[in-house]
Structure formats: C-alpha cells, structure tokens
Image (cartoon, rainbow, N blue to C red; front, side):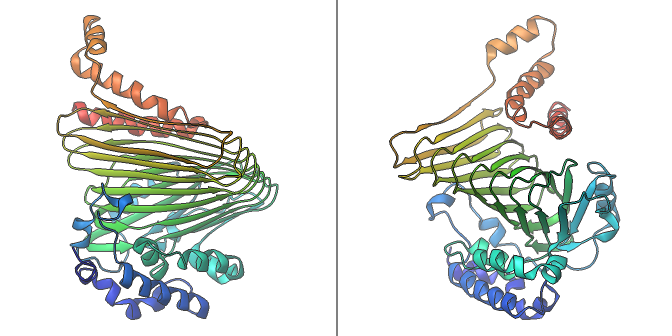
Length: 439
C-alpha cells in the first residue's frame, strides 16, 4: 500500500485550507505555520504501515480506506444523554464532543484553587505563551504521520495546569465523544498537562461515541520536580470506531506518574505511551486491561527511557480475548549509561477464551548501565481446566465458574488503581463485559 493511496482516502486533508479557520488558535501566526509544516510532513510520511517495525502487528488498512471528513454539527441527543449519565454528573468535568468543547455538558465551577482546567481553544487565547513551546515541540517531531496529522488538525482537547505545591484532591473528569452517525468523522484532540513542582492531581478520561469515527488524541504531560499525577483512561468507543492515541510523558526528579488504561471497545485501538524519566528518584507506573471480543483489535505500545539514576518503572497489563479478537503488547525499556540503580519491570498476561483469538507480545529491554534491576515477561493461555473443575464440583455452573476465573485474572491489574472510587468504576465495567459474555 503506497503513501499516495493512503492520502487519497483522506478528503479532509485536502480540505485543510477550508477548515483551518475553524480550528483553535486561528489568529496565531506561529500556530498556523506549525500546522502547515506538520501537514507537509504528513504528506511525506503518510500513515505508518506494517513494514514499520513498531507497527508490524497493527494494520491501518481499514482506516486508510474510510472516507473521513471534518466533524460538523452537534452530537445526537442519545449520545448527549449517555455523556450526562457517565461517571459522576456532579464532578468537575470537561466535555469535548466532535472536537469542540460542549459547555452545556461541562462543569468546571468547583475547580479548587491551584488548578486551571480549560479547553485548548480557550488556553490558546489565555496561555498561548505557555503552550507555544509544547505545541511547536510536538509539531516538530519527525517520523510519525499520526503525530504530524494531529499537529496539523489539532482540535479542542483539554489543558490542565496545576500550580506549584497545589494538591488537588477531587478527581477531574474529561469526556471525549465522537459522533459519526451522519458519516465518518476524524477527530484530533490535543491535550496538555503541566504539573508544577510538588503538585498532585487525579484525572480520569472517558472516550465514547456512536457510529464511525476516528479519534487521534495526543497528550503531552510535563511533570515538575516532586509532582504526582494519577491518570486513568476508560475506552468505551463505538464498535465501529478507530482510536489511535499517543501519550508523551516527561518526568523531573522525584516525580511520580501512575496511569491506567481500560480498553473495552472500538474496532481498532492503539495506545502508545512514551515516557522519558529525566530526574533521579522519579517513577513511572502504567497498568491496564483490555477485554476484547468479535474481531476487535487492541494494541498497547510503551516506550520508557530511563535517562537518570535511581529511577523506576512498572508496567502490568492483563488481556482477555474472545472470538476472533487480537491483542498486541509491545513494551520497550531503555536504560541509558548514566541511569544506574534503575528498577524496571514489565509484564503482559493474556487469557485466550477462543481458539481464534490471538495475542502478539514483544517485551524488550535495552540496557547500557551495569547496576540495574530489570525484568520483563509475557504469558498467554486458556483458563485452567482444573480450576474450572474445582469450582463446578462445588455447585457453580460452568458459565459462572468461567466468569469468576476471568474476573480474578483481571483483578491483578485493577489492584494497581489505588483510589477506591476509580477502581470500583473499572470493576463495574469489567463485570458488565463479563455479563455480556455470559448472556
């Protein structure tokens, strides 16, 4: 599949001049220049294909053949009602629907002192000097057509700035909604999180929608010294949706990032998490679970660079695959020469409930230091027949026995969530998935 073919099926790319005036930050000359440079890079790079090593397990052919357009009009009433019923309606929340903030469904009135939450469109008006470095730095990244496309068509996302020493206790909720009910639409949210020195916050993102749409979110996280961030992502996208997310995380000395990804839907999803640990005693923990059925495809790719001594990282993912679904885990950890005393671990366990289900796992360690503690591993298999027999011998029917074992398997990942309310939310989603499997 050639680059020319890939670009030809993206009519909204050809419509750049027609839509750019409606994109956030239109009056900013530096942003318009960055958008045009990114568009030129995309036209040179196009979408990644399976000849690219890190994309060998994920084929974007179906996405490339879909005629996406720029989003238009408000979302449907049914989707708006689902958003209203998602999470805690009284929580601090920002709703981004079809690439634009939905003020009617948002509620930021109770935001504590020291936290600044706003849509990207507003932030470009009020904090453009702060954002210019973040946006131009990402726009200049080379070698990834998806990043270039996001930089060119950057739409509303969220900007969260937490002041030095501010500890934000209530969870901040952001909901992204895509509505392709009137035809396939392409969404390119851009998010920026800036955590000040010794600050702390918790944020939960929910992605949902209807119809055929492509969400291509890019999130830039910069953590100051001693900062702490919990960031949870719930993926409940439509069954015909494409979700290709990229997270870029930078950690200073003593910073702690704790993330969780729960993937329950979408036709094809990929989550790339790239972290650079620049300071001593910083920790990067990311965990997650993916529960797939039908012909769903879910790819989790992590890239962790330990560039400072005494840093630590941990990755734990649990996947459950049924029918003809396919999961991918690629985890690369690089320990640079000066990063002595690094402690890095990564693990992916997959449970295959069908002979047609498939898991591809490629954990990697690249170590240039000699005083480190690093480990990686991956396992795949079916439910243990002895455990099933044990439960059935005690009066539990076969379907319930399978449900209990799968639930226990996933719980090891959910235990990485150290806040009760957020863990309970993911447990409810897992239970709902299992109930549908048994229904």
